[in-house]
Length: 512
Ligand code: MSP
Image: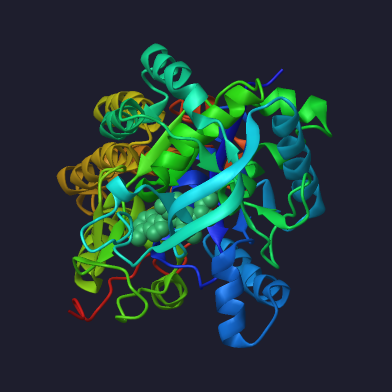
């Protein structure tokens, strides 16, 4: 039986269009999902949309439409973007689907019946844009939300509360026993410090909203949107309906989230799971935030970058590559057109693109367009590939995409150096050097074949196109990384294809 791997992204709010941060998370999760599939895992990759809550109500009102109309319209924009970004999700859950709302309602009832949820009063502060409750002591000066710096609203209302305080000690113990539960460790420390500061019971209902899952205990309350949202990770897996599927994929191997929603995933969600006696996820990986030219994204200030526009102008894989390569995963990142163009021109046009654009025409010119016979393997290339395979595996285990790519680029650079040194165009001039010429070209083509597999998780469309140019008709996704990267599998005699350059250089260097 295949080993299983369950990966999730946060489910996005659909009150606004998808932005670069959403694209980033989806691309990162997709890359890991593709990598694990190539490593032989049966992967379940879940993403979706968070469609309830007061944010949605507010925006729908502004647009003069119903919340249902708003979410139905917006979800399409997310799904369209995922398609354009080549996101290979296995399921897309919407929190308005019955398969989800039913589970949320049932879980709520059970926790109420077992005493983990009780009726009381919630007194405190609420940030509508973040859908977060805050204590007075947590607010920033001027009574601002510590997450988004916006004004918070004082709330005192009858509510149902979850006994989060009950899980303070069990959570601390869990963190101690599972040092890799939250990564990077700076985020783990942040969560642990928060718990040590004392956990208060948390409101899990709001007084009836017209748009939310009704509280099953009392009609005039709605379930708090965060409780609703977190449960997607198990409702989509068939918790309480498809025991076989649920038990084969749960616990999640990775919940991929941004740093602003750490508390919900590292404290509230595990406490909820403990109350339900469900095993905790193996890892919550917290990525950093993208800023635009050094500033926080803000629609009102016009600081936004539309992933659609970048894809339209530069293509999916340039965007995927940039997002994954530019910064160590986990840290914050900065987007500017000049950084983007510089990076993709240097790595994709100059290094990778040139390697392919130099090799294929030589094969066409000097080998009748066919993969030449294999005479002798080039040890330096083969050994570099072996070394990089280990580096990639280690990097991917800790979601270090930039590290994995920088490893792969060691092969690309070495292969370019190999062409320069061996100068096949010179060898082609002498009849006596034919064997050497064929050897050099075979080694380059074989390196490109292996690069296709290694690059597939990161830039799937382009990796497949590399194979097409090599004359290989199979789909890379049907391969296994470990077997496929064994040297010497490219068949002599197959016809290569010259196609337009994969990554033509972007001309106008940096629109600043
Ligand atoms: N709906 C909640 C998540 C519920 S998960 C059970 C939510 N939605 S969101 O649309 O605001 O954010 C979705 C994901 O995008 C989150 O992981 C968030 O951290 C991430 N990002 C939002 N802005 C971002 C950047 N500027 N940069 C990188 N990621 C960002 O939170």
